[in-house]
Image 1 (tube, rainbow, N blue to C red):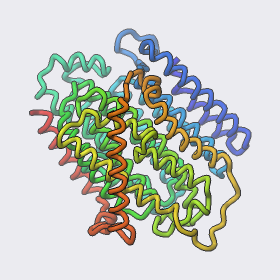
Image 2 (image 1 turned 135 degrees about the vertical axis):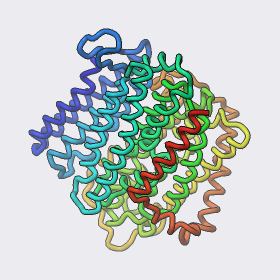
Image 3 (image 1 turned 180 degrees about the horizontal axis):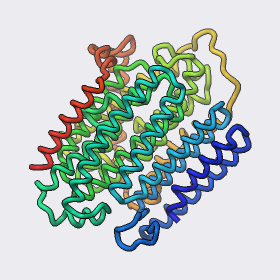
Length: 527
């Protein structure tokens, strides 16, 4: 049955390419996507009992293509189907061409296949397919800046995936297998220094997919291109970047958490750098994009702390972040359309101009900040539970930075809207989607333990006293964030912000960054 999760989005894409000019065809496609989401829900239930396996072609062992859905893969498949359903409903009334709808669902099929495969080479193929589709979607409006940024995105991906391919070939030479489980078994019999080179080659490409330091500057710039549609930005932030995190988890398990301390440090540095870069921006999408980089750094930190609850908290934070950022990016698209700008210094009085968008945005901001009772508070509570000493203070500092970013972002709610703002006719598809996503941010907090048990088949317990202590730390951090904003950021940005805002590595600089990261990882893996 797992093959249908890859085939159905492709069939929907072909159907829409032929009939998308008819509004009824889009509604039918949304119906099929709803059914796919329901089947993904059913798969999630099945995976709780045992891993679901499909042998494509009925080849025995690891000779053929094997699709596997454990609780982790099933959770990502369900999240993907749900986000694409949301995007399809949001864009129902937009005047998009057949190509846009075709590419949208082809991308969904590639991502679902990426989550279900356990083969190193199939992973390479699916990553390449999704990259090409994303590049075309980013360059969809054919603006000159879009073409240049899209080509830069493609060229960087070609470079990092060549590293992946070299690492894959070396790994196959050592183990004689491409299936992840078979490679993990064979790698257990090989000395660690011998695995350092293929590991460093493969994980450098995965780090680039996650936009980790020092590779974090290029992906947000692409995500915020002037012609890039808000739904595509939401997919890139909510899902496409998370596919890199998913591969990080899978490959780290194959290599028995090699160089975990290295990625712990890189995750912390990425989170801090992402926050500083987000604070330096004035473009709404760039703020949200760099904030995504910071949250990915926090997730990588949680995955590599080495504590069970921290790992589970990082997994849950992936879901919370995907939902919150989808709401924020889609809401930002509506705000930019209303105010005719994406510069937050020119956007004021959102609550008076459009209360629906303001309420949905506020709910999503509460979720990403980790306001008590929201989903982000549960995931951050679990994620930080394994941190002790200096690491605990570092995570508190990262959370303070996130609060400060969104305190600054929330300034758009207050004041009076500029003259001439005319609210467009209500589009209940768009309004319903962002309100639903905003409300889901709260639901994931109120039923956090149940959500983690359902999505990942993990049992966690949130202790009331410990959670209240974390809530107290959040309130103190919120007060500090508001104070810092009013003292230093209300009339501008911090010293050096302009240089950070202009930071944009050229292709040659990105290649150098990739080489430096590879060298450092190779040293860390060989120790």
